[in-house]
Image (cartoon, rainbow, N blue to C red; front, side, top):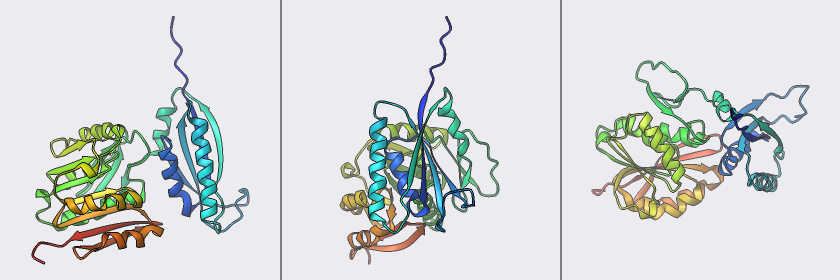
Length: 314
């Protein structure tokens, strides 16, 4: 007897939100387990009920249905209420949920991902899309496996731009020892290797991230340059010329002594995943007599810092 294909059950979450809160919400739904997060700008017209003049976005996120689903949605609603309290001057995001029963939905949402040019030379594309490189294009293939780390997010994009700038400006960069903390899909470590760096160590606490990063490193044929470890940065022993940490302000502050300890004299540290209200905190805690701010990148409400450790002869 032929088995009927198992129907996959998904919950589609639709969030209408002021633009200022869209990244925070995208981040949160990813953390609770959503497997595809897509953003569309909403154009206010006479048919929509959005009467305000502030730019709005619509976020769609997809959660695989399971025993935890009710809890996940409850925690999202609680988070929305907290955002409403934190930002009383902004309209509160609204949430609607729909159940999707589709044997093929796990593949369907992939059609949202298109190749994206991130920086002068780097183009990131999902493995299933075609892209013909032009000029000096460096093409990075990513199979997201989850929504974050596809280069769609400002914090990832700024890391790549900062990295490209530093690496292309230094003649010694290919000999550098680079550390990528919280590698996720492996995207930053892969970009580093593709920019010519010969030794990159990528670490993450999440075994699933390690698995996804491993696949992506293989797809991009940089396995001989990138080593992946399921490890906490606090436990790392090496010394590095470039340390990249795309995390959150709290985690960065917690890891500060370890990041500084592992940075060689003259090393660069790229810190990203920081929202505007955390900047003074980060600046106060990271700047010392031996660490200075070398560069600052800003996109929407996200900030990325490039710090430099003083060379020994200063």
